[in-house]
Amino acid sequence: PSTRPSRDHPMPAVHPFRAVQYHAGRGDLSALVAPPYDVLDAAAKARLLAKDARNVVAVDLPHTPAKELGPATAYDSAGALYRKWLADGTLARRATPAMFAYRQTTRSAAGTSQRSGMACCVDAVKFGPRPGGGILPHEETFSGPKEDRLALMKATQAQLSPIFGLHADERGKATALLSAIMARGLPDITAELGDGVFHEVWTVDDPQAINAYRDALAGEDIFIADGHHRYGTGLTYIDHLGGAALPEDHQARRSMMVLVGMSDPGLIIWPTHRVLGGMAGYSIDAFLDASKGLLDVSPAGTDIHALERTMTTAAATNVLGLYDFASGRCFTATPPQADPLRARFPDKPPAWRTLDVALVQHIVVEQVCQPRLNAGEPVKWAFPHTIDEVVEIGKGSETGAGGGKGFKAQLAVIVRPTPLDAVRDVSRANQLMPQKSTFFYPKLLTGLFINPLE
Image (tube, rainbow, N blue to C red; front, side):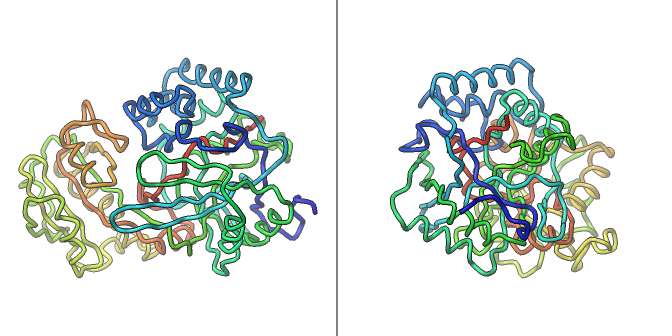
């Protein structure tokens, strides 16, 4: 049977693709794959290259930190190395199109969980709702990472890492199909990076299975979980190649994604805390005074690792944790009234207005820190996901979440994970959450499959 989408399959359609892979897409790739570029710093890149100089990070992260555009020579070198690997057989392109069932098993002290998705290419359409299903973003983005990724895409003419997409899968058809594929035999690819996550990939080149998966996704929205910058970069790259003049079947018109059903039991969201700095008039006492009437603040000891536990026992809809780096004092903070952003943002849906991260942005930063503690000037940010990262940034360490030289941490704002329902509701309302609202765990690996755009 044909794997071409029929006219009755609404946009965005999903497609198999002729992936570029290590070892012809077979065997253990632990030394050759890497976490996504945006969670890596220079030290992490060096550790990966110490395992194998051919690790994909040598191409995918030519400039650190990848939060802004680097020198042109860095991207030129990455493009030259990628083409060298294609020429010498380190990487090779599949002869036939395929999709890839991808399972991640996470083992920790809390137990074992599994999350499964399908790697495929999706028609790259503009963000927003559309009849039959659209591509929906859920958070705002920064310009710097998009400039970095566009320069790399131009240099390599490839999409090196998959975007993480979610779909409702309320009927469970896609999840059931993935389970059946993975139950048929051993995976073609395995990888493990020593972080407690085991990665397995099954190649799916059977036209019947591909069409069944396409049927399972018919009419569904795709929510971008991770990869907003890269998806937007792909749209810009289409314009770079000619926009409307680019042939409809050009591979650059398709975006490589791993699609996961929202009902998957292994779908985990971590919090993205905020570390604020650069405030000329900041002290914890000045903050407490400036926040009166906007936040009800209560002392919560001096153990930042206990702060999250204290927050989970609070009855309020919104509760933030505060940590002052200078004194080591902790606090909890709640707005004095329910739905505190309603008056300022009456047109936003309640799911957006009651996000903890929205309160950080529009109350803590915009109403307290900037106007009252920094003479109206912007504050500096870092976005750690764990309390240990918060502590490291406070010590002056550079992490994949920010910090390092020139960043003096003053106040950490600890938040709870953004609920998955909120991601869906805000996206369907065609609204965007503040930047860095979610952190889906585990991350998808880079290097299992590459989407060539030539």
